[in-house]
Amino acid sequence: QSALTQPASVSGSPGQSITISCTATSSDAGGYNYVSWYQQHPGKVPKLLIYDVSNRPSGVSSRFSGSKSGNTASLTISGLQADDEADYFCNSYTSSSTPRVFGGGTKLTVL
Amino acid sequence: QVQLQESGPGLVKPSETLSLTCTVSGDSISGYYWSWLRQSPGKGLEWIGFFYYSGSTNYNPSLKSRLTISVDTSKSQFSLKLSSVTAADTALYYCARENRAFDIWGQGTMVIVSS
Image (cartoon, rainbow over all chains, first blue to last red; front, side, top):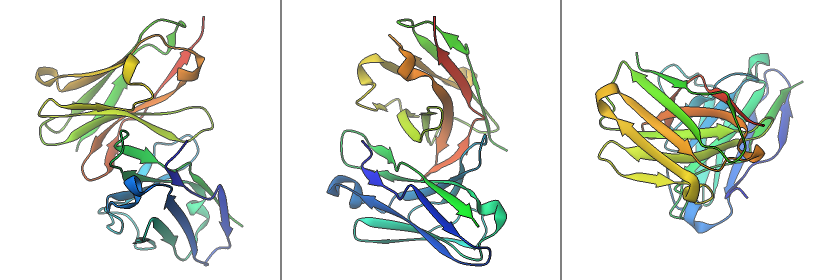
């Protein structure tokens, strides 16, 4: 059972903005600012989009942004494009016996 | 350019040991965490464990009793051994570098547990 809860699916139309939430179900995961987000297209390797809650690696579009409030981290994608249709996973450090945990993933559909 | 490449058998019999190796090229193993992760068909990502270049390791408690992660710095390789496998261990196995996040991934290797 994941310590990070994500919605199973979200959808949006091209050009719109969407937000995917990632809520820590216990304080051992929610207290850290080491949240990262990954995009995975079908059959492809996960790609790092955001690290340390809100930082983008070089080469990642500025349309992707991250934030955190309390125990909930969020990934916002602005100006939705067809290629954004993919699965998105959050990850966090935790102080529990499992130091790295993933959310269950969110499938983004671009309508 | 840092690259990671997993290698190992794609088919393992139930109750046997799954052994995979990740070869790192383009960078030293020193200075980072190096992790194994897996993804069951149609499922999400699961962190298996990591080692730190200093020699420390940390494993997912759900796998700890069956798991060993080791490193051969002379070959720039780190390895995973998972014993007493069952069908539940069938998955796509990834190795990854952790530099504040899992920033570099191998292509993944599919392991099927079946007799």
